[in-house]
Image 1 (cartoon, helix red, strand yellow):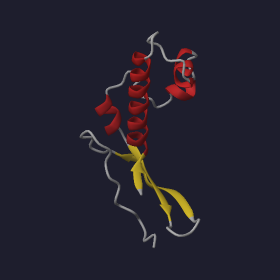
Image 2 (spheres, helix red, strand yellow):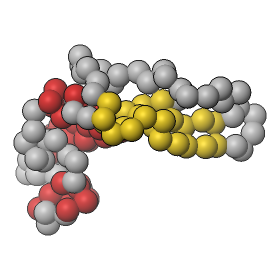
Image 3 (cartoon, helix red, strand yellow):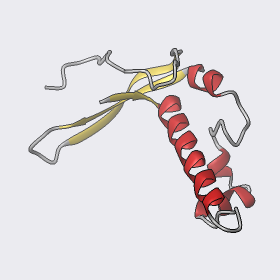
Image 4 (tube, one colour):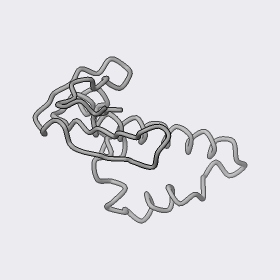
Amino acid sequence: MGLYINQFIGELDYTIDFMERYIANSQNGGESISAYNRAIKNDDSHLYENNFILSKEDKKEFMEKPDVGFSIHIRIGSVIQSEEIVKGGSTKNKYEGQISKFTEFTHNLY
């Protein structure tokens, strides 16, 4: 499986933010008491790092900025797993509402 780090993290941040807002709006007080919300209130630098929502960046611009391709290889039927960066940090991808597919593996994993 191959993915681009910014797009993967961006979609994850978007999903978590969406769910947090939904849960908060469903509760009586309208405010979530989750670890995510506490981290926002405490200005947790780890949460704000590379988070386009909390940094108030445009989603499309964030998803299309230079990125790193990363691969995860899990062999079915065994416990072997390997990860590696397969493309440097200068790759610029198109974002059209979904994560770009990474298919340019540099060697045969099988």
